[in-house]
Length: 402
Image 1: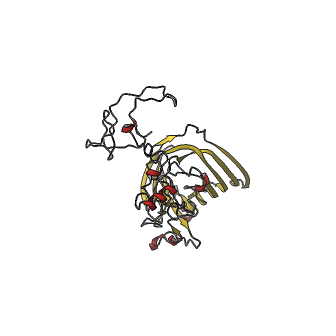
Image 2 (image 1 turned 45 degrees about the vertical axis):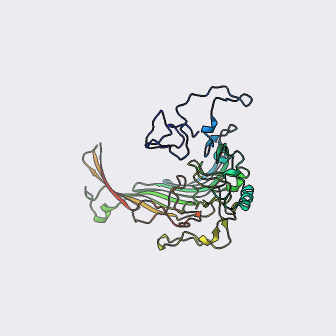
Image 3 (image 1 turned 90 degrees about the horizontal axis):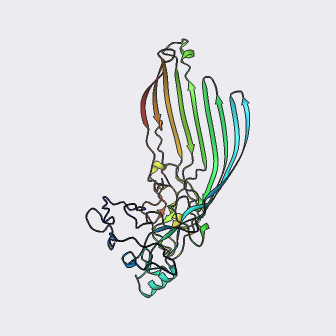
């Protein structure tokens, strides 16, 4: 999947020549040691294990490193979903509902390394010749080296599950309406995206909270007509047509994704553009997490002293995710005025404020590799809050309705 520029899986040079797609704009190979495989004649079809194609000079292409391939035994992913709801009409214009929602995902796509380095061999080699093998220097212990490097299979081997309680109340009145929802949920998986590798011989090693899990989520949307008519005891163009609408949200943050980017396991699962994280995890010690709820004090988001790099050649004891980062406290508000022009024509004027009270919203996007909290042990920024949402934004708009 890699050696197919200019339509490559993640090969993004500045400029592409169709006759020499592996060359950069400077005319030199994109990476040191890369051999230009083009132009070349297409290989003949019909190769089999007993009758291989001997027209390809593989020495020009080896080692094939960091190459994700599709597992030929993949299955179709599927999910099972179920829910149960109970509704109660409180008044003619008010409805209350309680729901249980659950699902399970099976055969989900995940990155599985198939040519990992051998930690025991690496330690033995380093003991015999100091410096000969170690973190990010363990290719020579891979079973298929020097023909293949840190390659992986995109395999449908991961599973997930989600369970939630949902409470909703809806009111639709003449002068006001609102919809209030509360969700208490938990999402677990082996891998939340193809950016997260799973361990080949122990898929459950990375089973943890989903990167996008949000344990508690309260959202209220509402519309309230302002009673200026009653307040000023008159009804005219100035007092009529005022309303406030908004969306208010309080929620726990996303889980903190822990990882060890130092290849301490000696498995050589380096990120290669498809898997964004090492498979390695830190060690955990017992003690209070001391979650920092005051993100403005400059302190870490949690007690970083509880986490450490594991012993060389071993896997860490921490779950990939088991506690949450900063939460959400956000108000989006709109002040609206309707100005009638004729019976069928109206001008609508709106003043809108997003994050109206300018609360600092420290959350990122855990799927795209921009989490709110740095969970990489050994990093100078370990435990720091690194991403935030936008500050308060205002906008004014007008609409002519006819």
